[in-house]
Amino acid sequence: MKRSIVLNLLTLAATATLLATSALAGSVTVKGSDTMVILGQKWAETYMKKNPDAQIQVTGGGSGTGIAALINGTTDVAESSRAMKPTEITSAESKQGGKVKEIPVAIDALSIYVNAANPLTEISLPQARKVYTGVITNFKEIGGPDAPITIYSRENNSGTYVFFKEHVLQNDDFDPTAQTLPGTASVVNAVAKDKNGIGYGGIAYAAGIKALKIKKADDAPAVAGTLESAQSGEYGLARELYFYMFPGKSPAADAFAAWVVSPDGQSVVGDVGYYPLKK
Image (cartoon, rainbow, N blue to C red):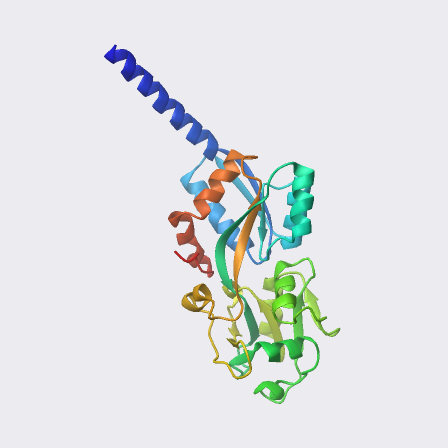
């Protein structure tokens, strides 16, 4: 009798281990945000080292591209630097027959960049709005040098573009002179080479350029995009970064997403230059 119980327990333990292992194994596709692609790739690299039977493929293309792929069923996970719109969620659930889950996975201090040689150190959100809508065209109007401003922006399928338009431009149109570039890395590269350039993008990309301190209003204090200010919301352009997926559709994707928000997965976030979720 005791031997039978022991054998049953061993069988159950072996079955549980097999199920857990099979959940970790398998291929997972992650597609979307160019802002998040370096973070997604770092997560994938770290996760696959810990789970050799897992295969995580991460590609960019923009938040809109990832969301479209989720709607069409061609990705397991959509990475997005903006929240999905209600119409997008409805379309995805209608086509795929499941419930979309929104999973905050990290925090970004969206930055406004200038060239490293530019003496400007801060900008208010009202000033940024005027710059990007073409009302302000010279840095001297915002406390900088007497020099014309060259505007760099993102393409309209970018979640960062959508977030910036909503939260900074208040849904006004970008100035027609704004040069549209295909990714945050391209914006950073352009600003790094242009002493009169200004651009925006994720805090993790701010290398070789200067990320300005942000003032929520013209008379508000200037705040740097640090871990503390981003997590507290004191920083005016703090935002969450997301995974969107259909739980239960792919056990391997479920296991990967669960690891990403675990302490182990969150420890990777700072390595890339973004900020972990507030505990």
